[in-house]
Amino acid sequence: MKKEIIVWTTWFIVAILALIGEIQCIYKAIDSNWDPIGKRELVYTISAFTPVGPIIGWFNISDDEIEEE
Image 1 (cartoon, rainbow, N blue to C red):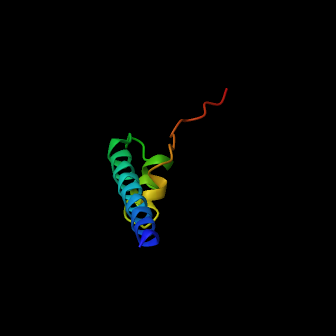
Image 2 (image 1 turned 90 degrees about the horizontal axis):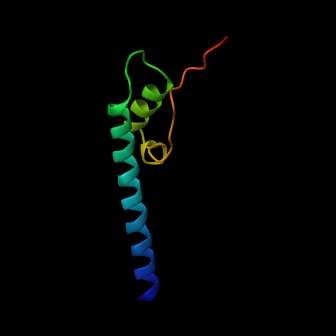
């Protein structure tokens, strides 16, 4: 009985973290600067429609341009 409670609690926590990660991924895709389209926009948009979205949502991907002198 105690083992079942631990298993269900673990799955519940994993599901909640995955849901939060997916929401973050979608938010970051919408919140990105789309002019011009860069790495950040592509990664978050593609990830939002695939199973890796809950994982990618936890990462911060910057779209900083490196200025050459």
